[in-house]
Image 1 (tube, helix red, strand yellow):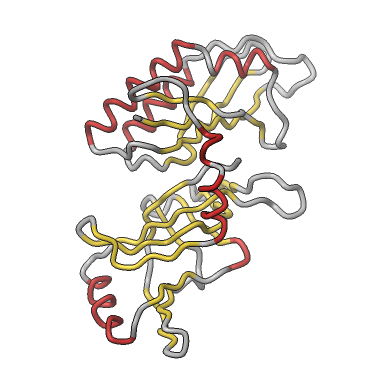
Image 2 (cartoon, rainbow, N blue to C red):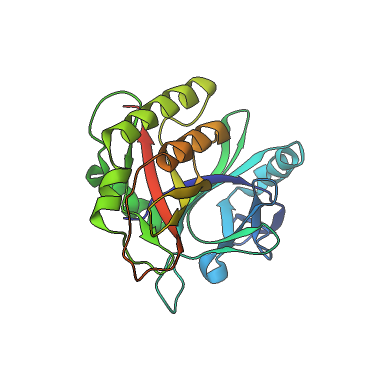
Length: 251
């Protein structure tokens, strides 16, 4: 099952449809996040609209002008031709993410002013029981790692990424992050740059995070970067990139 990511994005409110009582977010361009380093491309160019009574539209626009935050929940979309998760890194250091919208929420001072949800989110909630993370307290678990071509790594590599010392470090990272105000439950995708001949991890970078705490996401990446993978198949390229999802919880 695809993990749910949550990001704060830049936005502008658009038109109000009086017939449907819906206030739209302007999505003519991709939604930008993380100071412009990430650009969310909504699958199917679907609209984001809040059900708002006519008498509340002015107040919502006023709140937006005063700095109300738009949070977007999404799943990684697929490239239609190859059925791979679509994350494109450009030469200009902007990561373009094909996003299947789950929800959008306009908030101010920690209070939700307007919210809309999709059927994707409801279906995802129905399957949450299958996502349990064993243990107690702050902890994390590694999901199935994959290469850019959607192939899976050798089983010894997956086991090394799930090793107890790595999981223990996840718990430390998450405990410290939550103490700073990070989300109690979240996900991080780490991109590992690996020498296939030796299994040495050359770089461990945060690709995506829903924690709201960059320091914790970096800590998780460092924990994975310290894993000992061992040699890969001799037929591989000299260097490979491996995407590793991590789910973090408290309770």
